[in-house]
Image 1 (cartoon, rainbow, N blue to C red):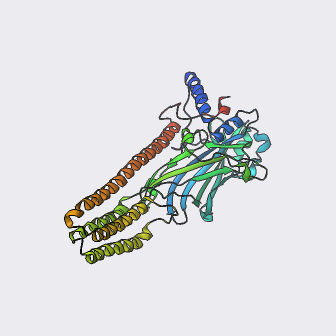
Image 2 (image 1 turned 180 degrees about the horizontal axis):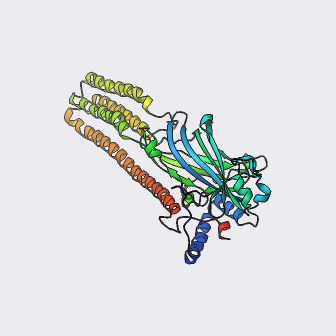
Image 3 (image 1 turned 120 degrees about the vertical axis):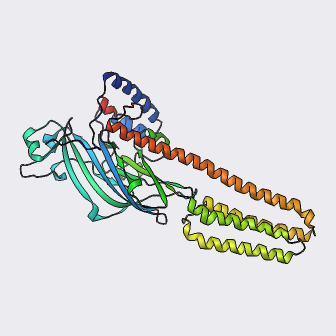
Length: 426
């Protein structure tokens, strides 16, 4: 039974012979560079063997992110994903009868056994599964009765699943409050890499609407990173494509694939509620120099009150800061501010001991003011440089994902972007 193609399932773009020849050259060049990645090189070697592994094409639709827990370092997301693979011998591996009204996994002798690697929990009532059998190469769905009537020589099998689950992610808060996180979803096959290799779909465009449907006001959501052996961004990413042999009793490796949505924290609320008050508290310490150096008791009263106010302020805002073993940028700024207050107290004590006059103390005050301005300038420049890099990273991620969508909707034909499998060329 034929059905119209949806927006996410467009037919592949027809290639001319010249385009195919140019693509073959580009593919060989890209694969030669990928060989420098240990996991990608091993995958390429497996695919080029005579009896290489089956390639399973994964498609996904990211619906919404319900929660990002920075304490437990988990996030909850709703998504739909599908796994599609070619069945070259349906007469042996596809079991159907006239009584079957729909396809199930029991109708097939082989399936890739896809699982989530970093899943923590899953809402059972939100899990939905369906199986489709598609003709080759037209990709038209067929029912069990239509399959028995036509008896095709080969078919595509597609398993579709909707899940709502929580995933674990090791988040890096060292750049807080300008931090950027990747909410990585790792999929793997339970069959060894000698039998199954995972890659992203070469026909249907993946979809993402998290930015429109997610209502978490703390983060800004960007398109996901696609991390697999055939994707151009794999050389710049450290995510593994194969599991470690030591994780298996038999020393086997299993194919991994990663979907990594990128989120960026809105820093303005933290700058207004933490950084700016901290800046004002420390800047007020220069008021102490209006008191004569000989009046050490009044000077110390002001200094101690400012130090206690700073410590109390940090205790009040501690709930707004992520719990992290590493020192964050904002934490480092607050710590340096506290140390600067201690330096002001030491200067007051030294000035009293040396019995300096107000005129003789001016060079020390100027030095302290210069140090405070340099400290804030260095922090601002460091944050600005990181923000420039972060914006470029997010822009590149968005452009790669948009290009991926346009490639599979037929809007553009860019041979340098997408890498075909060696098995497809043969």
